[in-house]
Image (cartoon, rainbow over all chains, first blue to last red; front, side, top):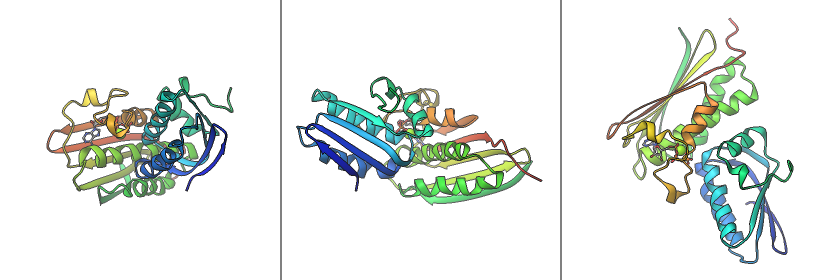
Amino acid sequence: MLRSYCKQDALVVALDGELDHYCAQSIRRQLDEMLADPSVRYLVLDFDKLTFMDSSGIGVILGRYRILRDRGGKMAVCHMNPHIARIFHMSGMDRIIPELDRA
Amino acid sequence: MTRNRMELTFPSLAENESFARVAVAAFAVQLSPTLSEIADLKTAVSEAVTNAIVHGYEWRRGDITLRVSYDERGEMTVEIEDHGRGIPDVAQAMEPFYTTQPEQERSGMGFSVMQTFMDDLEVVSHPGEGTLVRMRKRIAAGVRA
Ligand SMILES: Nc1ncnc2c1ncn2[C@@H]1O[C@H](COP(=O)(O)OP(=O)(O)OP(=O)(O)O)[C@@H](O)[C@H]1O
Ligand SMILES: [Mg+2]
């Protein structure tokens, strides 16, 4: 289960464990259940407890980014370790999804 | 000259993605890698094994072979081989953002990740026969004879 915190139209979700192709399906499903609430317009993904991510994670993040963008919302990330940050930057996601702890 | 090597064969089940990357990391410990080198290796292995599962075999089940070795200078060679559908145009497949599965939320960044995190990447593929991904990485601390 993902830990999450919701206040008005903002949702903060703490990812944990590993985000690979095997885990992506369940993480995607849980995030989409939370995003099914149309009042959610802001999503922050907290990577503090995420120990591994590969390119399957890029797909999950970009997919949620599109859902929020299409409803006029926004997405941000925080607490990425250097390794995950490298993948994030490589894919150009840093240009569309701000890192809260870097700004 | 090869100093040590190992080989594993496992079916194309998604739960074997984490098994494969942990196995490579455990083997690499003999070279005293840094945490960052371990993370690089695990990520690259994860990309190649995932590709064998989701592209190579797609809905079928088949065997994936993982071979890892290192030489006296601490250079690791990692091979991931499948006997799946193969890649018709390897150069195109390796371009960043190229994917044949956009509907599965794939981003086409797997080969770019392998290229960035390893020193060398080689892909040999024949349509209908399968794909061999060979990657090399020098572990700085290396072998202490
Ligand atoms: N083992 C394989 N067998 C058959 N086709 C492959 C294999 N590996 C890669 N490909 C092809 O190469 C393309 C690019 O692979 P790459 O890993 O870069 O991106 P992806 O897997 O599509 O997306 P991502 O890795 O970002 O989830 C794939 O879409 C697929 O068409
Ligand atoms: Mg891939």
